[in-house]
Length: 165
Image (cartoon, rainbow, N blue to C red; front, side, top):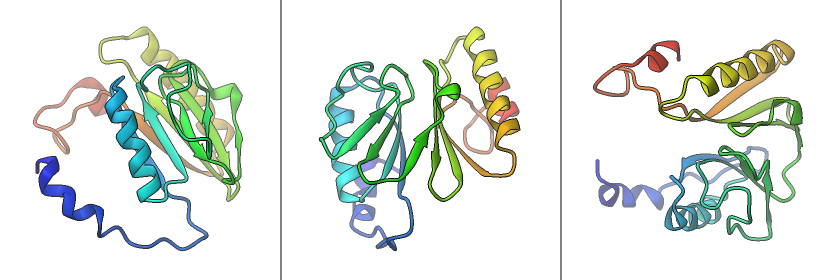
């Protein structure tokens, strides 16, 4: 369904109770325009946490308003978090391709970017995920990201990454 056909859904987002945390995952593909659109969506949908992959100008100010905080800005998978959202950063699991946080209600969220044609990074990323799962195995872990994985359940073809997921 093309983007134009989905515009009617934007105005039908359900209102959210105060105790929920609204999360958005988006690969902005190093695009200034996509980053700007992410900012609009975050405000419109009252997003608390955005898992952003391939941000425009990563490692610098990527243009989010001052009421948001950028977590792990040098990563290709940082979080953008609304100020006032209670969390702690899990720095031991942060890298160029991963960012992890612990939410106040005992949930762990990790943002991941797996480059499309790299095997060295995949092994390091999977090792990071395994370590996170082992350390926090009694908590709910939410994994977000761009895995560059294909599987017949969501795509027309399957690759090794899709089978692993």
